[in-house]
Length: 606
Figure 1: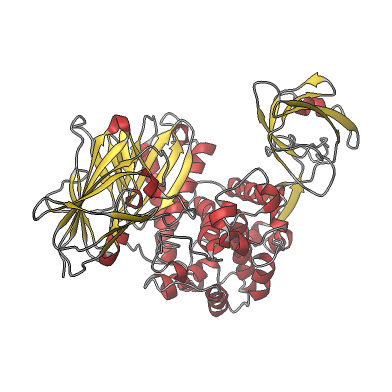
Figure 2 (figure 1 turned 45 degrees about the vertical axis):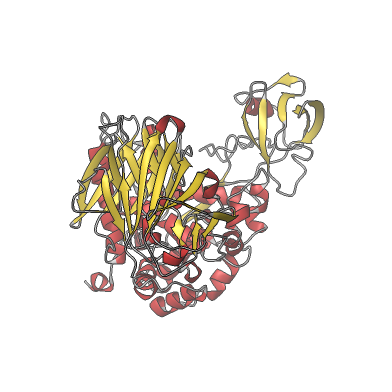
């Protein structure tokens, strides 16, 4: 049995964004070794080719110091022949991707996912791994935050030796290093660590208090927490958003103004709500996708695309619970939650994509159509996150109605965890329908066939009416900018049906919505719109100018397409009603859903 594979990583040249990596491969019975680096990482379904950032992969024999020939066979694979003893591999990694997916290093901090920096020995994937994380010479005050297990001699948040039971565990524990702020809090006896990297004036005590409520809610829902500590590794920037789940941690990116203001301890700003929702989403993934996951992901094959139709359940259901859990824990009121739900529904119905692509197809094609969206995406695809969350919402209300409030989606998620998650056996497509039937007695096959596998819409109005809630579509005040508002339902705004952003001269069309009319025929994404009927326009003035026309009138739009000036006549259309709004009409009926908070059968009986 070979000893551990030993890695060493050092932020050797922060100014040049270079990590130096060494790995010691112990003597093994294999005479041929294959080195690989993942092409993608779990939770982010796009080929990212991390190997493109590796520099000078070299090998040396530790017995005599001679060079070991390494032959590259494809973009992410190397082979070593005639292996006779211990080998050391050396290389550098260029790290300048400020995201949650890859690696980033400068004089301020360092961050990496193991999938972007640690080569794998394919013949030894199950061998334990040891990692020496070295302190940069010039930054003596830097610390380390990671879900990797510490060796006995490594201090908490200290540089030193860490270990993982195998390669898959190694690359599922991202590492943050720098002069971060740390707030540790206890959730049901388990330490949780909030790490904030970057300049900020956030109230971390309030963050810890609110995150405790969310974490407790999710643990109660599933009945257990399958890890002995948890890390929220958060990088704050001027403007950013992102999250990626891991087995006992998450990597987050947020705007510094999203953190709560210590001078306004009772304010729930839109930014802070967004941050809490992001944390809720990624923490829910501790169960739903990190352990309870599609069978085709067991084990992960990270060298190429792995296709599944099930991302609607793993991202869509999680997206349903992220905001809903803020309401259920008392962090936001019902009205605010319903407004957030309305925004999600509006995003789906704003585009034409849900009539062109099913959610199952969206999941299957995540690798290209979803993760590589272009200016026509709103017309061609639907998000398995957003429509998946609406399907989950529909399932929840259907189950509550069918069982007269005795069962909910909570019970289904708990059963899925117990059947397929705790032992990580994985799910097939039909397991969701079968589990729902077993737990609730309701056969959801027809509902999912229509909403998941075809292009049918979730019957939101009918579902809401069973809960004493009225659902309406109302008009927005600035449809050409595609920004939701709370304008009166009586105002009609002539519609161009395009997305706009400010430009040095006029506005730039970001995308053109196709709703089957001729409102925007001839306009294209990328056009620089400079005048309307020979009057100069800007992002601030274009709607007010349009409001002086009537639906059905024709206007002349002057645009630059590339460097060519064009005049395009456009007939103004009536905007679609596309802002979702909810009104609670019966407190008694709505409480079946809005007061349902993780109850078990024993709670209902009482």
